[in-house]
Length: 469
Image (cartoon, rainbow, N blue to C red; front, side, top):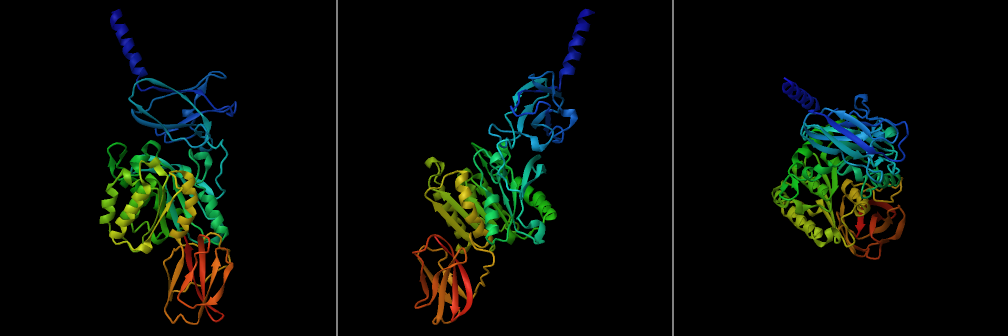
């Protein structure tokens, strides 16, 4: 009888232990308030960041914080907070840390963990017109969630205007050094400066990468060594879920001509794929240091694509990327040839190779402004408000961009016409003079954006925008 009782007691004890997961936080940052309460938020409680039922307890000062929960077996994702997403845990430098993950098999187990920082303790660099739309925006196509950022033009609240929209990947790295492990793109600072100099503005939607799922989500094809294969579902999320929400909540210009996507590395790969797969949604693609090597199927896909005449693609690559293991410049040029062979016009495509370019945020930060200006057709950097050129359609300038000579083609006799060159600040740097041939020598100008003014006598007929490479 005693043996039966003992067996039953052991069985009951085992059943009580089944399904119990204990989270034990052994250390917290030194700047944690002494009266702080720690909470756990995860996919097991709807990501409720301050739910009293998921508060950790501490038996005494300096003792670990603990909580025991009973989640269903499966892949768990979670983070610790002090009660709000404004006090969520960060990485070792005070920046963004991906969700913690744990494959839970349903048995009793204790995880011993440390909170390294509270996010933002590294001092935010995000501008005031950048906000976090949602910490955990549902991604139903993948059964996950994602933090979403939104940048609004400085005059959004007062203008009443509608704006183009640029969707960007790796949102952690776009606006705030405190959330980036590798440096930020300074998208907000760049766009704010352009706005002050005459740009009409754009809404930017930053989508955080999925951490451990990043490679999977940024490639529609599977790489046998690194993963992939979820790119279509990720794009379905943007097209079917996120974009409709953004268009409903904000004053947007939803047409493809006013909608772009931009990303670097794997983000560059999925950006080009998006422009080819959804030309009716994304008319502009900024492709930075694209990891075409990860999924070489992209070349065949591009070759067979039906190129929309409204699509614009801007690609950059650096000679110093990948330590020589991958020739990013050669890959970019191969894609350029592929796109041109598929029917894309040369005027739809811009490729730039930089001798100093590295696979790094500082490089993409530097090149973001020129890419945005080319894709969205805003006034170039430095153009002052009030300088409103009347663009003339009856003549052409080619090649544009160029590094030496601009050739001019007019719809009327060019004899008797005069031209002047205005710099990006709206100041005339070469006085107008009568043409003695339909060409301009600009080799002595510094690289950058300029305007060519065309006159008949003292009457300004119009202006063309040119780029001196």
